[in-house]
Every structure is written in structure tokens, then in C-alpha cells.
Image 1 (cartoon, rainbow, N blue to C red):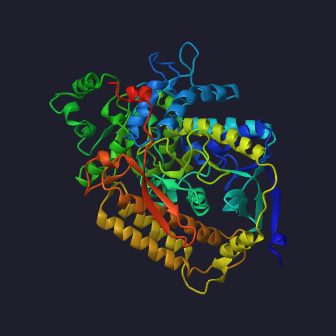
Image 2 (cartoon, helix red, strand yellow):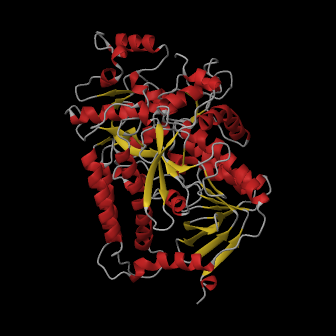
Image 3 (cartoon, rainbow, N blue to C red):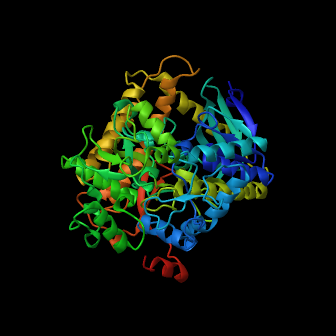
Length: 602
């Protein structure tokens, strides 16, 4: 049977892969500019990882502190990313975030308010001023609700429970995307001159993660195989506060908003240990009381921060050190206490999701007792290398926005910057993809040979004669990545990790899936293992290459940050052999006026 008779066919100007904040915002923009737009999501509409981003949207609106502005936000983002950020992306993000928040409000988002009626903003780690616009601790959910309703109102075509597996090219240019319906297993082809990847991250490569099942690195792998570059793949963020007990909920996110609203981290001795992990000249070890220590620290930092709100990479490492030193909580974490600082009514009003989450899942009343928390794989700063202004990758016609794209966050993402990232660069991706499609009308052809090859590759698990189980391989990968490429890394363990990934790749060739293509989770897992192994290899190899510690990448054998490593690791695929290669590329230098901002004190 010809390949053309084996798949469903659709034609659009722009195809958006992923329906989280970035994908929805991109689809809205592309459609508004007249592009025929398809929105394709692996799960159900509204079931995006964006809803798990609870604390708020970072934007220098100046509603709480009038002295806040885009320059301070730019500086915070660059410093938080340990100067590995693309300066232009950080500049665009800081300048455009306030408008994107106000736009969201115009579309119906309901934010918490200041006494004079403006959008309320809260503190978050690494931000000098309170700048996170929020809706209690359900900000991501409100953002998705608003964008989703706006997209549906615009009449954008939505394809739910549809997994895109392969990008189709005409020469060097993108020509479409190919995948399958998860329920029926039937194949589907989208022909389009522009494809936007907004498919999220890689969390399911790790055992303990805040990410849901969809996060298997699909977009990064597809982009890489289509010839796009990946950068910063070693930069994986372990959020310092995920649930640790009971085991069934281990890794579920505990919003940074708990600490932003006054929560403090304590070890098994009841001590606020974070004071011991700030730079030596900020330490408050000689203070006789916690109040004195807080006051001392705030005076030295010249702002309102406590060390509990240091950037996420620093807090995660501190928690990891406390647990290893035997000062952890009974279940291998530390204690996060807000009950002694805030009254129950305040907690239930400001943190309703956290209150119900702990009450229902762990039988813990956070208005009366502390939470047990520990690091959880949460976000990857690395991903598809994109042009700062347009979000286009190194492949013409292929765009990327959100977590699947790299450059904005550098070596470490500040909390709240992810949601504004989705809005700012989602909009830009939709705008420039629509413009690209308009300038490339028709003329693209879809090679049936590529489709035939994609179908053949996707059906391999049904032809397997081995006895390997895809779920067994996934469990081995999760355990290996958690143990060998986690918060603290060493050369010997990274070598073990790359060897493990190669072994699992070999075993994947012996996977056998039974049944047919109709809603076959085993088949889905076999295909997802292929993508997970690709991104895991990129992470492990990049981590081994970077012989320093910076942001989300900590090498026990190279603990210092080296100025010579102020560059990015670039992952590419050799077209002839399919081999993964790695090289280094310098970061673009910011112009003098932005360099001056970065050198300011404060």
C-alpha cells in the first residue's frame, strides 16, 4: 500500500506542536496574523505543564516597588543564569514581559490585587524586587485557562491526543510534521512551511521529577534529527522543593511562593541552615537569634531577601548537602515551615493549592506543621538553539519557544521567568512563523520516501523478536540519570551514564510490543524511549564536557566556576552517520549600555 494511503493529511501555514503557554500564545499570534494555524497536543487541551507553574509571572511592572524596571529584571536574569544567557533574549524578555501580563489581563485573567487595585506581585528567589504577578498559587492554571479560551474563541484548529514524531523537510527547509493519533494509532501528516515547537522539557528522564508523563524530550529530539542545534543541555534545574513523602507523590512541586510568602527551610535540628550556604561575607553565623540573622543578612544584601530565597540551584545544593550530612528529615528531605510565621487564614488565602495538596496527599496541615521537601527535576535550561528576535532555529521554517528552546535562562532559571518566557517568546514565535509562512507560499513538497521511513521506524517495536520491555528500560534510564547525572556530577559517573545510555539504546532494538496500534501504551513508551535516550545522551555528554560548576551544573571534581567556560556546548547531528557531536561556541557580547547595567551594584 502506498504511504499516501496510510495516513490522514492536513495542510496549514503554521503547525504548533504543544499546547502549553508558549504553544497557545504562538497559535493565537499566528492565527491573528492570518496564518492557517493548527495546534497539536500530545495530551488533552488544558493538560499542559504550564498549570504546574504556580507562583507567578515575572514582570517588572513596578506595582509593589516602584523602583523596579526592566533593567533590574534583565540584570537579575543574567546574574541568575550565571552569565551564560543570550543577552538579547534576556533583554527582550525583561522589556516585553509587563505588556504580555497586561495583555493576559485584557483577555480575562484574574490576578490578585494591591490595595489600590493594581496587579499584586510577590517575592521569588533571585529577583531583587517583588515582581511575580500571581493568582494565589494557581497562576499557571489561570494563564492556561485564559489563553485556551482565547484560542478557542479565535477558531484555531486543535488536534488533541496526537503525538508528532518526525519533522518533514524539503531540502534544508521544514515542510511539515508527521505523527500518530494516540487512541487509534493512525498516522497523520501536517504539511506546512512553518512548524513551531512548544513541547516542553525532559523531566521523565529522571526518577524524581515534578514533570508529568508528557515530558519526554520529543521536540528537542525531533529538532536535533532535523538538523537543528541543541545548546546548554547539561543545565538541568532541580527545584529545591518537591514533595518527598509519601512515595506515591515524591517529586510533586511545592511552589517557591511558600518561601516568597515567608516560609523558611530547616534541618532536623530545627536550624535555618541556609545562612551557612551564602557567600562567606554574607554569613550570619555569629547572630544570636534568627531575627538578628535575618536583619543582618538583609542589610548586607541591601534588599529584603533572606537566604531561603537564593536562586534555585544554590538552595537545591544546600538541601542536598544537609541530607548527605545526616541532618535531613525522616524521609530524606528537609523541613519547609510557614506555619510559625503566618497565620492559618493568610496561608489558606495565599497558598490554597499547597494547603489542599499537602492535606489530601500527605495528611499534613501546613497551617500547623512543616512540610517535608527535597530537590526534584523540574526544568531544563537547555534545548533548541534559536535566533533571539525571531525564535527560528538553525533549520529554516523551524521555530521553538518555551522550555523546548534555550538561551534565555543560561545556566539557571529564576522562578517566574518561565511563565513570562512563554508569553514573550510564544508571541514572537507565532509572529515570525506566520511571516515566514507568508514569504514561502506553496512550492514545498513532501517526499513520500521520508514518510515511508518514518512509518517503518515507528512500527519497529511491533516487529521485535527480543524480550525487552520498554517500561523496564525506562525505569533503568530514570534510575541511572537520577544517580549519575543528578544535582552533583563527577567524571566517573558521567562515563557510567553514557555507557548506560548506549546499553539501553542497544536493548531498545530488542524491544517487542504486543497487540495493535489502537491505544497501545507499550508502543507509545517504546517510541518515547527513543527520544528520552537522545536527550539523555545530550545531557550526559554536555555535562562531561563542561569541566566547571555553574548554575544547574555542579561538578564535584571541578567545583569552581571558570571564566574560560563562559561559552555554550552545542550538540549537533552528523547528517551522514547520524552521530551526535559536541562543540563549544562563544556567547555574543552585550552592547556597552547593557554591560554597564550588569556591572551595577545591588
